[in-house]
Length: 319
Image (cartoon, rainbow, N blue to C red):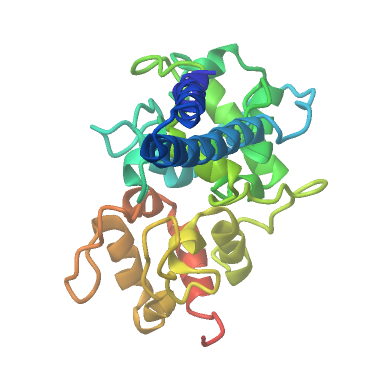
């Protein structure tokens, strides 16, 4: 665990300050005894608390998820096709390389998009070049559903997404598609995440979001069709609500993800305008969508998926 190096320094510093405060309190001059001694003691307490919180944060990274399922995916052509659709319209939002608009070769540091320097969170290469080549199908299913790697370590960014809401069949389809890929890009390593000391302290102090709840039992999806019901399912795993709010009526200042606007605006758009917005990054008023908005992967959804999403957004209750 590379984060242990982040914690070692403050622990050593706290030890040195403890020694310094003890030495100061043995001095005869009052200004040295109470001045330097008090400052050293205060710093020792602060750094010790930070170290304890960082250790608690490190422990929280290894306290999530159940055992891997015993699973082997057949990889039928229909399964691979459906998995390709989901990977293009959802997974590529994080796992496409920095220099590409699609693909799953990873390498992008998602930590750069966070408002605080919490660490480096490199999206893994999901092709056979990356760590999944050593994972079982059950390990991959567990990573999507439980947000943990084969060793049980929390996949931090993954745990903030709604990937666990994918149905069992769609999750298996994604695995089938990943198994069909050819090697591409570079190996991002088995544990590409690394928290900073600040990130570990905030994690230990419960100042960062908890993992999304893991669905119990079998997760199903409505029939794949351009319907409001299927659109509701799409929005259950797509991460629109992380930026646009729980009711999709706009983000709330102070949230960790970027602030997204009120999606009730879609109610005055035609379907063609909505689809064009998602596929060009420019809305009907000529406004360009921000870089934080993953319109490219969303725009790669099929016409039926976009229509289903549109049907859901245009029939939301007024907020």
